[in-house]
Length: 475
Image (cartoon, rainbow, N blue to C red):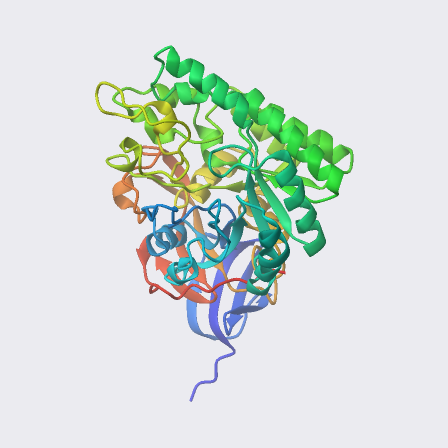
């Protein structure tokens, strides 16, 4: 009987960690990385990564998947389809959002959400959305989240019925500080948006592009400044989600220079798309209606500069998909709509009724690799930090996820940096019927995805079964 030293050995690849690149083998035992070195002894299974990179499995810390609205409607992307898409794109771990509906307790809001998540193929964790921080929620329910390993809260400063007042936001910050939790924030000024939106609608300006007119950079910048200031008042760490413009990154950078505990995240669509995409004919602009809105040409360069400086240190997908054939055209399909539904003459919804969100979980790492590494903006360790390591450190998964180190989960991606391919939704695994990157040509693609030592994707074919992902309690 042959005695193997490892369950799996990945051989002869260029290993990319958060701080270095080197040629080595990786040995895996019981789902964990146990050895990194040259000429490792035999594994029960062996994979060649010759002429390829071996990188940590991606950690996407911002994914809206199968969220349940108070009305009972459910987002089209399920945990099964969404995690298949994630794995195919090289992402092995997700942090999604547990809903709380205003007027409801956390427990009574989407009580089957954990059961829904148990169908995932990728490993998963949660941010808890807080829309109604009543004394009961603050003092009794939020502390119980710690037992689930949920160590982060999400708050909105815009959208009805999700937004918090400044006073409510302060109460959440205070409770999070008491419990040692992170707070993540959607920063936009609700009243300013409402004023602009009403003026545009009254003037008959209803096309998708006016979504961006109603949400200019100033409403995001002001809300980010306010969120950071209130967090400084309380002394609570926050992460500003989906930064879309350089002026918002500047607010974060100024705060960090003051010593404030604030981090910034951006998303791939802000680095590759602009307001011009909202102007596409035949309602095509609805495909990229998201909040904060897409910005003018040139803002992406300012975001890249902020990424290079470390001001923005996480790049997520903010995957929040609504199908173009149905949901984007249906004002009643979104839990995040704002304002009274209004239809155009052709039956399409006005900009304020288009469900907000774009699908990006499957394309995040490939598009970023092409934009950052292939085009020479960033080196390979920076790519790893942006897609995995930094989020793991921020959200309590350091040492387990996000890097190739002994003792970490064996979440690995064999990546071909020379492979060139065009993105086409027909090749993808998501439930959503379009991708904003349709026809985008990228150099650098995953060929094999390994989750906890098990090969789960090979050449875009999903090998894992539904329900094999694990809930990730976080420190």
